[in-house]
Image (tube, helix red, strand yellow):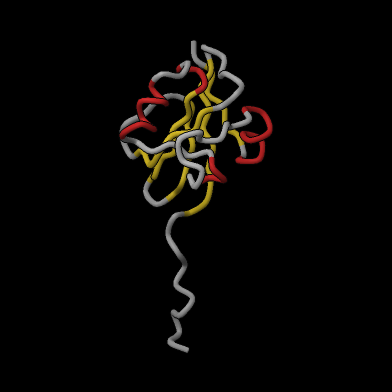
Length: 106
């Protein structure tokens, strides 16, 4: 049986402590994002699967899910604290779409 858990982004950061990307010092997510190709992807694939998280675009909503996912992936994060094998986590982040501040034409 798998236990599904939801976290806030702050809880995710405090509990799982993402590591900096040693390949790209200018990586997104405060230096903790890994790309989905090249050296970054090879580095992610070499990690313990219980440390890998996927940054996802879920219909314009940014989310982070524990595990290595392909569909809707924007990148990866690697945690320093592993996910328990019988748990999956999801983290809702920010909306990717920009609000239209100029709806009234002013």
